[in-house]
Every structure is written in structure tokens, then in C-alpha cells.
Length: 523
Picture 1: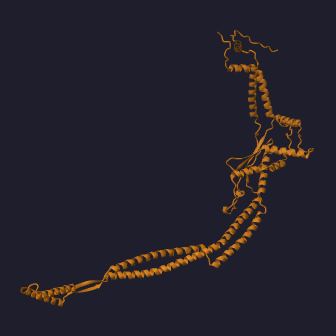
Picture 2: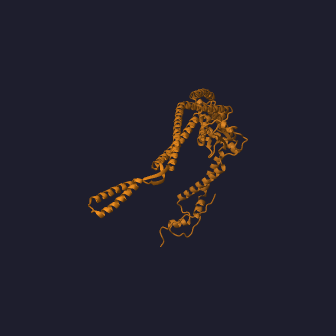
């Protein structure tokens, strides 16, 4: 069973070719007029020439001069590169500069169309004629004269010319450099080059005018002379103070005083250490002398006591007698008791005499004591001299301390005079530099030297930059082709007649048995 709505197939290359073939007259009718219109516009456009120049922006006006001694060159504050370039571009884009260039070259009096020259080529003559007809139709005057125009109309034409000049002028900085590129477009190549070069010349003149320092040299010179008098007066006051105080070189004198005081303080500390050492030695010697005997024994002997010998003989006799009495008497007998009492007394006396024997000895002075005494005397003598030296050194330290204090006081009193002198010196030197800068700037002004140098002047361009007729023609062909193809498909889409066997099968859902082509006869 056949489907009542067969599926639609995609558009093939054959279908596209069929549509283009069927609508070939639409293609031709659109493509050719569009291409001819674009070609006509390209032919009727005047050739535009671009003149360009490059200027170099220096950070110093005197960078172009040779200075043998670089240190004598006056110092001028340098701007940052980007800020400097931007400021120069703003000066180049100033309205007054544009107006002066337009006025100098009388661009506002130039006719809108070139003069007709029968000897020119046919396209050139056609362009001129079309331009003249267009401006006549718009009511513009083709005469360069301003006769019959009011002041308002003249001013309006001048302002319009300035605006046109500004739109045709391009000023851009070149990246990573100190160069500025100036481009200007015009239909006359000679005029384009002249305008660019004249713009640069006027810009240099304006830059010189802005940098002029008339009267600055005399001003700085008079101020420098006044500051010089103040400097001489401050030097005289400082010298009088030095003479009155007896100062030759205060910093050196202070340093010498400090060095001397430091030296004496070091000697004083060393002397005090020696004194403490000697005192400790004396204390040790005295302690040793206190425990040492002054004399030492050399020989000792006992002396015989004759009374003691007699006493021993008597005691022996008494003991013999007691023995005899014991043989005769009892122990309680009176004679025996008396003898025993005598014996007891004799023994007591003998014991006492034995305890108090007489001895003889010889002695001499202790040599250790003599040595210690000699060392003590030497130490006391050394201690005395050290204490005297200590007193002298202490006095020297106090003297130099007082001298240093006096020098500090003088330094404090002299500080305002030194500051005044230093301030006057700095001011005087600063004004001398400014005076030299002003003198140098005056020399640069006299020789018309600015920090703008023409790196590449504008030359008369040979080839036009616009219009590119080949590109315009190619663009017209592409545009015409797109419009023609699009319109051909649109017309074919709006035509609902059956054109191919596939259309019949698609709309009727029946197979096509045969087809007879339409034969058009041209009469």
C-alpha cells in the first residue's frame, strides 16, 4: 500500500543547479547591475594619497647638542616617556594648530572638486564632471573665492574645513619608542606632503614658544647675587664665633678630646685593677706574718741544779734512817712518823724542782718573716705609687670630660650658625643651577632648538591609498553573487508550479509515466 504523504528528500546539488538555471535571468539581472554600480562608484571616487612623517620626542631639549663636560650640563627634571608622548600628541591635536595650518594653505578656499582638464584621462574627467554636478545639485559653490558670502558663511566654511582636516589627520604614538607617526590624506599628493611638513614646523614653533623663559635668567641672576651676600655674611658670623671660642676644627677637637679621655679611662681602669691586686697581696702577706714566729730556736740544753742534788742526798739519808727506825720502833712511833714526814716533804720539794728545771737555748730571726716583710714593704711602696698614679689619671679623666662638655656646648651654640650657612649654601647653589639652566634655555631659544626632531619628513606619495578599485570590484562581485543567488532562490520558492518530475511525485503521490518539455519559440 502506497503512502499518501511521501517523505521529503533533501536539496541536492542538482536541485541547486536546476534552480539557478531556471532563474538565470534573475541572476543576470541582479549580478550585473550590482557589479556595475560598485565599479562605477570605484571609478567615480577620487584617488586619496597619504603623506606620513615621524617625529622623535626627546626628554631634553639639549639632547641634540654635544656637551664636552656632561657634569656641567644643567639638570632638568625628566618626565616619564608615556606622559611625555601623550602631552606632545595633545599639543599636535590642538585646535589652534589646525586652524593655523588650514589658514596657511587656504584649505577653506579650495574648490570642492578639482579643475576640469581636457588633457586628463577619461575616468578623471568623468570623476570631475560628476563631482561638479553633485555639488551643483546640492547648491554648493564651486568657486574658491568668498565674494558674495557673509562673514557667518565664511566662518562656517572655515570650521567645516578644519573639521575635515582633523578627520583626515591621524596622529598615533609608535609602541615601544619615542616616535610619533603623523598621517594626512588628501586627493593632492603634493598638498598632503606640504601640509604634514608644515604641521610639524608649526608644532616645533609652538613647542619653542611654550618653552621660552624670557626674563628668567635675569631673575635667577639677581636672586643668586642676593643669596651670595647672605652667604658671605653667614660665613663671617660663623668665623667670628670660631675665633672668639678658639675653635679651629671642632669635630676634630672633639674627637681628640674623646680619644684622650677614653685612653686615660682605660689606664685608670688598669691602675685600679693593679691597686686591687696589690691590696689583696698585702692582706695575704699580713695574714702570713701573723702566723709566722719572729724567732726560731737553733740549740736547747738543760742546766744542772746543785740544790737539787743536795736534796736528793738528804732524801736518801732520811730513807736510810727510816729503815733503821722501823727496825726499832713501831709504825705509830713518834720518831718514825717524824722521819716519814720529812721524807714526804723532801719528795714534794724534789718534785717541784724537777718541774722547774733550768734549760738554756739559742735562737735566730725567722727568715720567712724577713722575706714576707720585704715583700710587704715592696707591695706597700708599689701601692703608694699606684694610688698616686690613680689620682693623677682620675684628674686627667675629669679634665678631658670637662673639655668635651665645653666643646659640646660650643657645638650646640654653633649649630644654628652652621645650619644657616648650610641653608644659604644650598639656596645659592640651587639658584646658580637655575641661572645656568635659564641661560642654557635662552641659548636654545635663540637657535630654535626644541626637543622635537623630525625623524622622517613627509615625502610626496606616489601610489594612492584609496580607493582600492580591485578590492571594490571583487567585493561588488561577491555582493552581487550573494544577492543574485538569494533572490533567485526566493523567486523560485514563491513559484508554486510543478517544475520537475520529482515535484509531481511529491505533490500527487503517483509515479510519473512520461513528461513533455515545454518548447518556447522565440519570435
